[in-house]
Amino acid sequence: MRIRRSLKAAALIAAAVVLGLLTVQGTYALWSASASAAPGTVQSASFTMGMSAVPSGQTSTMTLADGTPAKLAITPATTLLPGSSVYGGVAVTNNTNAGGTFNTTVTAARGTVTSTGDGSLAGNVTINAKIGAVAADCNTATGYTTLTSAGLTSPAVPKTASTVFCFQVTLNPNAPASVKGQAVNIPLTLTARQLCGVPGGC
Image (tube, rainbow, N blue to C red; front, side):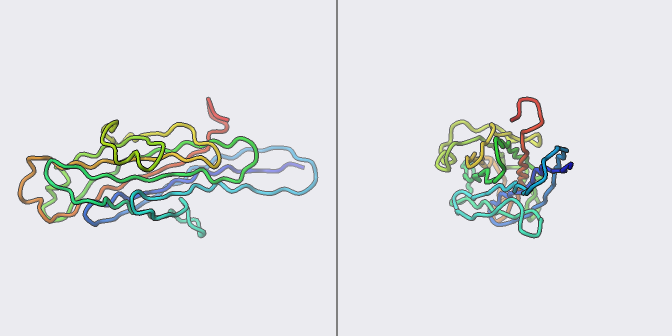
């Protein structure tokens, strides 16, 4: 008997919200393979990735029960002022129930930054990111680098383990007065992929 099995990599969006706007989108990747199995019971595995926002603690799985991408807001706890920074992040946990080794890697990529009003706020913020071990690492100003559209990729995340993406948003100290009261939206796409079947994978 030949059993066809599919290993799905879920892709998710966390939307970093600074001063109140939220937009999200999502993508999926799929790997498939064939394997022979003796007659008997075959059970499918679940590729589940959990997310927890920092500092709010809002939680979700990357995909909802109906298969749609989840929406998670990362809302900084402080106000963004000229020359200052606000911090937030998302902890991503590999909650798969697959047997054997099932490492994943997660990539955070930045989308197009937009803002309300005349749009000048979007051009006056800098978005940096880093990988942390625990949520508290997001509050430490050191170690951040510019987050580009190419994204930042985590080390391998084994089953039941987590990685933390920390984000720092800084407002230009010379930002024009017109940015006052504007809201900026920074969309962040989190994509989780299983590593089996790729070079250096399981």
